[in-house]
Amino acid sequence: MSRNSNRKHTKADRFNIDEIRKNAVSSIQLGVEDFVISRDTPGKTTRALSAARNIYAGVLLLFKYKIASLAKTPEQAQALIYKPASVLPFITDTGNISWSPTLHDKETINTGMIKARLESLGVNHDWKAILTLRDCRNALEHLHPTDPISSIQASIAALFPMLSRFITEELGETPAALLGDAWPTMLATHDFFKECQIQVENAWTAIEYPNPAMNFLRECCCRACYSSLLGPLQEDVDNQVSIDTTDFRLQCFACSKTESAIEFLEDNFSDVHEDPFEQAEPRTVQECSACSARMYLITDSTCHWCGYETVWPKCAGCEKPITEYVANEGGRLCDQCAEDEWLEQRR
Ligand SMILES: [Zn+2]
Ligand SMILES: [Zn+2]
Ligand SMILES: [Zn+2]
Image (tube, rainbow, N blue to C red; front, side, top):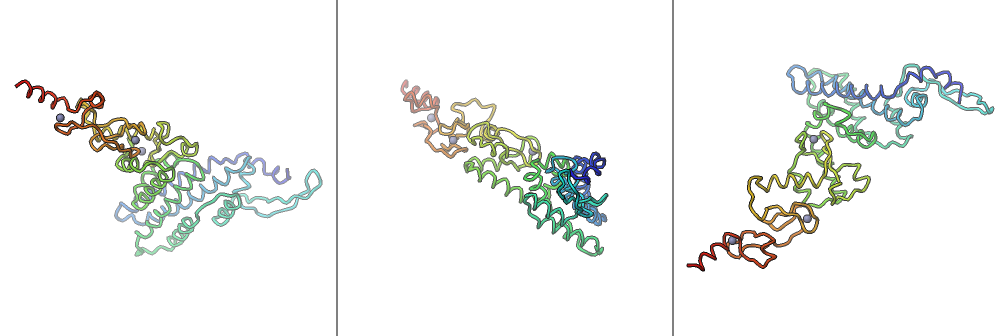
């Protein structure tokens, strides 16, 4: 160990990466609040400036948190996010020369250094959005009162998709859990919502979820928050859980609620197609003989999970579906038609 890192020991002890994370989140939350005020309150359009400043600062902190989290010790973490004041040679215990950076007391790494370090540490990231935000913030510093505020708000909103991807892919967390109330606000911006919708669709397509099931899923929304952004749970995708078992879960993109995908679809399917007060036999929704999901509709003889089609037995008299039991017993009439026929023969 170099003398340099020994000397910095006390400071490193106080260094806590969870603080960076907390500050990042509260900065983003403040920024999103400012964004909403600038958009919704007449006369408060200049709040867009502090929105951009706060969100920009928060995103940079989140990047620093990611960098620091790659370190094994607080000393390493600190060295990763403070600017080196100079790089000096030291003689090690074995007599070798080792070059170590002495760290700045206050100054942490800037945007360019964050980018370079993330890249050299192998964290892939789309930098266009952050550079757009930097330009936007720089432009805001020279804001003229007559500048169209909508274009500033648009560039802030353009940052949301990048932030969402970074949190999911690089931090391995759900944005809803990390960002709290700021998250639904971000989702409520139209363009971002569209982008999330595409992202969710692609995630289902990538695991080859059956088309009929996806078509029906588009009509459903989260039972907890009513969001329509329901995607496959990444953990189950990573663990290659079979999509045709009830173990495979979906996750709400807005509130992170998870539940069994098939059970969720079956419940919603039953709500749409069955009247809980009607006891009629046969039930309109049956278990599919191909995939076992309770999403086979006897009225169109199709399973709405896997797409399997098979003709459901119909009454020879009125063409209404008859129970499988009656059909298997060689019957061809529904109860009503059978009774009518019986009365007819008595006459
Ligand atoms: Zn939800
Ligand atoms: Zn099926
Ligand atoms: Zn009939």
